Image 1 (cartoon, protein in one colour):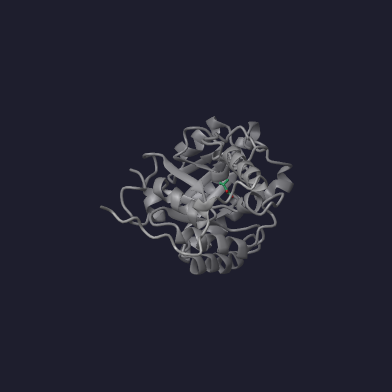
Image 2 (tube, rainbow, N blue to C red; image 1 turned 90 degrees about the vertical axis):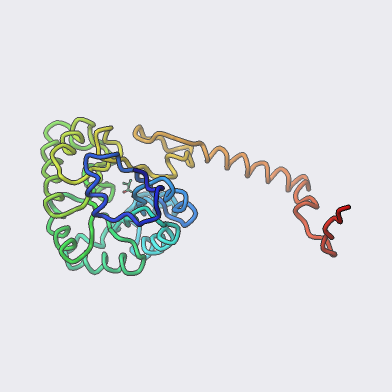
Length: 279
Ligand code: KIV
């Protein structure tokens, strides 16, 4: 069933109940107009901390703040009628202690009106996930490649190859046991993501993790082709909007320089135009 058939908001418990069913469709959004488009077609709208790189020009997600996530979260909630809005907890706002995580998750939920948060980490975050869930904060977990750990992982590498598969499986079991209602699997071999999906009772949402996951997520701006210089293997480009925008801006610049814009059609006269009289 798609998110479009009714405007009833999708809840974390609905996502959990979709385990093994029709794949869950997820995209990121950071603004109201994009949230409106995503809401028509998706089950989950993720306000990812990728917003820092995509909209704010940051080199990694590490400089994203709680205030940024709350501002973009509010914008997305305003544009959403049906999809479950999940908001990323940024780096440094949840790792210190479960109490720190709860204080910041509560701010995100109370100030944006979103129903769930996402945080990165497996075994190491299990206690925090259980703490949040027990206090009314639904949590989507995120394991495999966790971009907030780029400096310790040594780059944006595929995770879980060879002996590392055991670590990923342990992380998956830990977040599911802790009460996460779903888990993002990022940049894992498809066979391992399949194994994790089969082993868990919660839905897995893949990004660069193959077809067997219970759902898929992409960064909206990547799949729309808004960048010309970012082509990771796992991103399928469903549009070339960057090229279309470049052409439109070039056309505008040419017309302005040639005094071809604005024409009377886009200008105002001293006296308003009188409607034509029929007959
Ligand atoms: O920040 C983000 O957009 C994400 C997705 C890539 C899963 O975490």
